[in-house]
Length: 420
Image 1 (spheres, one colour):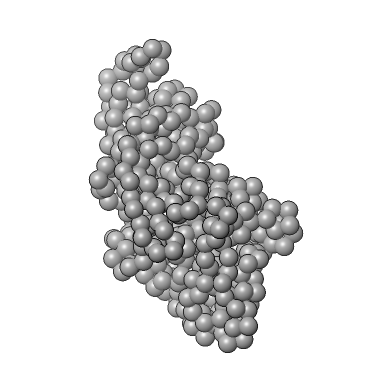
Image 2 (spheres, rainbow, N blue to C red):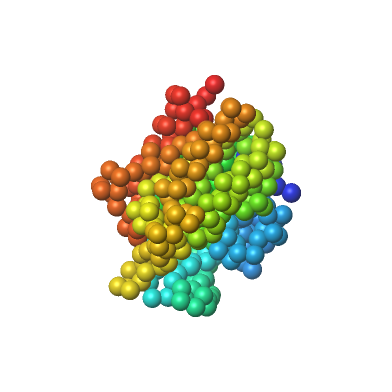
């Protein structure tokens, strides 16, 4: 099934309000030129959003957030502010017998001056848990950043509408919002009433990580590696992957602490190295503090620490990371000096060693803590077969491979999240 595009306090991530939406009298669907017109407009509120920790009114519609108000109030980093408002893992979820659905939104697309824009984001449709269509975003705002100066300029554009056919019977419908574009949800239109879906009994998996976890270069919103792993394992995903901003911030740890979750994973390292944020002396205590805060709210929850996947530019070379657009294509390069590792600067090899030792030291007093070497998801053999196209982020095929491997290694028999 193919979709069509026309221009134009911390919450429980499991919940929808569950209240039936206002029903219209039974009638034949309105048509124009043989096309069904979705005549029922349903206001989109927090009860229809799954995978968000908050939502706020924007200039055009409702903006989902992946950090709660208290965490956003502590943040001063524009990178994190932008990433947490990009709705990776957030979906509009409802039950309906409609034959068609339209979702009107206003996106904000981010680009770097001198580099081609990344492909349009995509809305993915799932019907009764099965992928049923995908449609690209259109219109909206364009936020361009000059990587040399940091100067930014925003150009406004019109709303866009995606349209999907539906089976015309009672079905669970999920529209996954683009993982890489801030999205204001303006209107939901159908030709039959919709009902919000309350929290189910599936375990909630909260995952925190970097742009790779957010889904950079994935084919679509429902095919990021965490989304694929969650669907394979039959769990409810809460994705706290923040592009360029997985930096052991205490307010993020508090957000995880205060969020209901049955399973928690934190994938640490690539952003700390890329930002040249700290030296090895500070890294260990920072990770300990992050985990201690999570444990204050989740003392017995299965908690998995995942080290970085292979990234050749940072294996032996410290940050900072820098964009490279010299040939008109966006790539990344490490600008640090490997000789500085002896003085405490971090590389991915150092980070993996530190994380493995740190977890091993904690396990005797925390038996529900686990560790996964990220190279089990993407390692040297994978880099030969599927090299990172921009030297930093995996491509769509690699997201699929990582999702399959994580599901097998972590949710499968003997894994950290295996059923008891």
